[in-house]
Image (tube, rainbow, N blue to C red; front, side):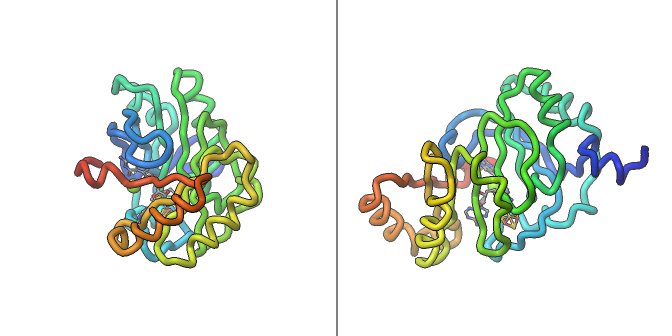
Length: 208
Ligand SMILES: C[S@@+](CC[C@H](N)C(=O)[O-])C[C@H]1O[C@@H](n2cnc3c(N)ncnc32)[C@H](O)[C@@H]1O
Ligand SMILES: Nc1nc2[nH]cc(C(=O)O)c2c(=O)[nH]1
Ligand code: SF4
Ligand SMILES: [Mg+2]
């Protein structure tokens, strides 16, 4: 089978980087986790903090066995699949293999592509730049909306109305706008107590 077909089937994937660190964001912040960052994204967020990831062709394509073997080197058994936009790929084979090897599997996604894979935790971060695919709404365990502008609160509520009732709702300041936006976010959460704040704590700790 050629490489292109293997990528299409999710048996090989472009890997930008993989690193063992502390989950910095969201409901699982503070937990050790192995991050697998897949290359390729067509969403185009103006404030994206990993724009180098966008071009899939730039990154080496690895077989899922090799990807999982690399993850097994570290003592933690929580993996976060991120990108780029990981749902550009069929994640069924990779997540099945990770589960076989005993991993707890999380994903960070904009939801802009059809859902695939089996996860223990789905963090859904919708974007104005490319609308989510409807398949994400029943899967999301965590809705994490980046606040870059005051109009983003309304955008956050629009998506909150579409996720499951049990889905956790978080507002995360866009990193470069944190100082300007934080006061508004704090007031918003105090007045709308069904929301929580998520900070990019790894950036404060200066770790990947
Ligand atoms: C780089 S994205 C990769 C996963 C997926 N493409 C997504 O957007 O969810 C990982 C997380 O970082 C968030 N993020 C990206 N750039 C950010 C920034 N400048 N400030 C705050 N959060 C940011 C995204 O919203 C997402 O929750
Ligand atoms: N430490 C750490 N935590 C993270 N949580 C989500 C991240 C991501 O880029 O998906 C991320 C990341 O890049 N580093
Ligand atoms: S969807 Fe994620 S990776 Fe893609 S541009 Fe937006 S923040 Fe960056
Ligand atoms: Mg990041």
